[in-house]
Amino acid sequence: MIKVQKLTKIYDMGKVKVKALDGVSFNVVNGDILAIMGKSGSGKSTLLRQMGLLDLPTTGRIFLGRYEVTKLAESARAGLRLKYLGYVFQEYALLGELTAHQNVYLPGMMLDNKGCDYKKRAIELLKLVGLGKRVHHYPKQLSGGEKQRVAIARALINSPKVLLADEPCANLDTISSGIVMETLVRLNQDMKVTIIFVSHDPGDRQYARYVMTLGDGKIIAQDGGPA
Amino acid sequence: MIRSLKVATLLAFTSVTKGNFRIALLTILILILVALNLLFVPGLLDGLAWGANDKLINTYSGDLLIESDGANHYITNVDQVMIEIANISGIDSATARNYLSAEINFEGKYTGAAVYGIHPDTEKTVFTIADYIIEGSYLNSDDTDTIILGVQLAGADRANLELYARSLQNVHAGDRVSVAYSNGIDKEYTVKGIFYTEFIQTDLQAFVSEREFQTVAPLLANNASTIYIKTAEGADTEGIIEQILSKTSGLKVMTWEDYAGLVHSMTASFKIIEVIMDVVNLLVAGITIFIVTYIDVANRRRQIGIQRAIGITPISITMSYLIRALFYSVIALSLATIIYIYGIMPLEAHYPFHFPFGDVYLRVIPFVLIRTALLLFIVSIISALLPVHGVIRTKIINAIWG
Image 1 (tube, chains in turn purple, cyan):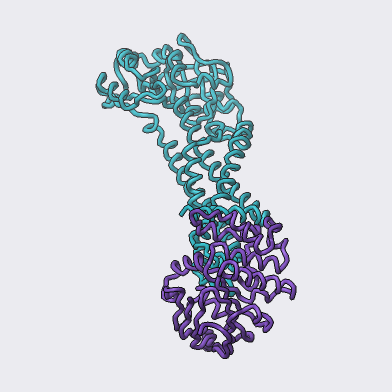
Image 2 (spheres, chains in turn purple, blue; image 1 turned 45 degrees about the vertical axis):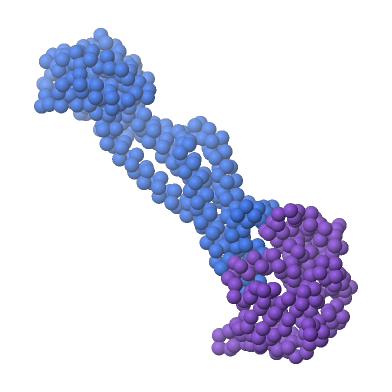
């Protein structure tokens, strides 16, 4: 269970203070698929970055299971990012000097779980996202959709409890977008990973069981989700 | 830690193999030049000091010198002292000299000199002056009425000599010179030979045989102004000095270092020059690695942010840059050492640097090699650490999204 309580994020831009999130509260149950929808500037990505432990809120609390992660030091949050969270960036964010295989197994190498052959698992994950024949390709040799699927495989290497995806299809054509979103749904079903994704495309609602719409940093609509 | 090191090694390896080849090559080339300088300067200065000391010992001072310690400037009963010395272990050979100051005249030109009475046979066992005869021949024990002159006295029509102007300028072997000794005796000698050791202080000396010297200064028979000693390889100098002093009285013993103030101060100056050059070279190395790392880190700011976002620890990212800097240094140092030993040293041996005391050959000193490696590695690590540290401290969100 992920609990978000009265989350506020204010960006200090010198003389101007911008309130990106304004008292957002919600829960996500394990194994759910949450879509955070909203217009550009509504606070979707800001919210995802707080949940992905990439940034700290100004006020409010986030619980990951029983841990209040907003209280943790950076080193502890880095450990949680590695172990419990997978993050898929909007712009693929692959490391250009590494092959698809190396990109995927790098976080696995960092965690180095005993009994887990991260190199073998990386290949399995690449096969799972339909890139079994692209294992040794470099990012520049892959299409946008393929890069995003490598990023998804990388996010899954340490068997995270939660996968966060920030506009995973923003730079993709319709066909590639469909493949990426269906891959996320399939991973949710097969691996029971909680998926939280951000999108501004209303068509992506179909992939979620819980849809939350933000406007001006506040929740303006919710559909589905925990009772 | 091992996990971090494994990840760092992968990141460093891919960064070197898949990164900008030209920048890597340029960095290594600059570091090769720096490493060559770090090897060349001490190699040259050590060669200089070694060459100067070698010439000093073999043509001027020997390893040890014995002089009178009292008011009498001469060692008396020198034959007995020489017997005592010969029995001391660690002494290879010894020779005694007497001297008088004199003025030498040739065709209206005058020059002052110290004329030494020597034992040619034992001289050859301590000094190598006999190997530097450029005209005529060396003295024999039974020679009389002959003299050999250092080239800085004779001139020998070598206008490029350092002290040519104050020399006799045109004296050659076979010429007759007149010598006015400080004890009032005047003698005419045939110049039997001229020597050119390239050590100026030696080349300002003139030698006659002890037999001839006794005809000039009969009162100094069985006396010597100085006894010069050559010690055996690896001999215990301190032990030898103690034994000499215990077996004789009224004498003082000096080492060649005590006797060689000029060479000593020169060597000390070389050390200062070496330190200055090392500091400059290491600064160049440090700045090179700093700039390369800084530009790389600035260009990869977002990438470093992503690495941190996916769980790569700051220590792994930092270590990857340190490994890369060390890799550049190791490659550069290895290539520089190969170039120095198999390229520059043989070339310099063919065309050696010429100094007032002779040719100087580059030397390779294991200590300097190890010191150079350590200094280069330390400088590389610090120079790479500084720019990386700045980015690692940046918030992930700022590193990725600005």
